[in-house]
Image (cartoon, rainbow, N blue to C red):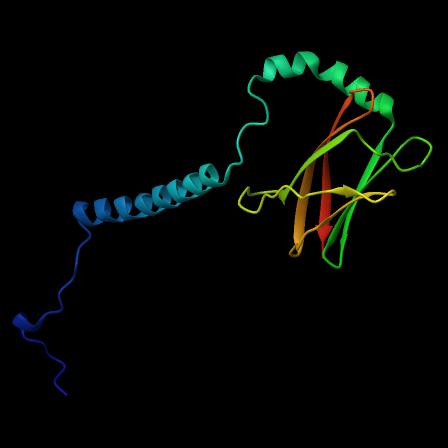
Length: 161
């Protein structure tokens, strides 16, 4: 082997120029900005919306509504077995409560895509509705009205295994 190199066979050494550094910075920050925009888009797309139109007005009435709701002494529990969603409302004495009206929305905690309004019927012990649920975390956002007109609002967490 010939260990001598001719002058025209010298290895070429590439130098980092300002253009290379600029391309590296633009590429790195471009990836960061693209990922942030994608995450922001998905967050806004899946946001279920506002809870109340005017938070100041809602805060002024909060204590009054909470006191009226707590005076009812109701306890709410939810379960799901064999395709049947059960929502039980019990009073302070532990007996079942039949409400004047019940509106409920069942959905995932993070997305409104799967939201549904089950058609609950009172069976003498609890409110039931036929609903097919997949595994995971579900929320029931319910509004029940007592016989005296008191509104009872609660978010009931249901974890389906």
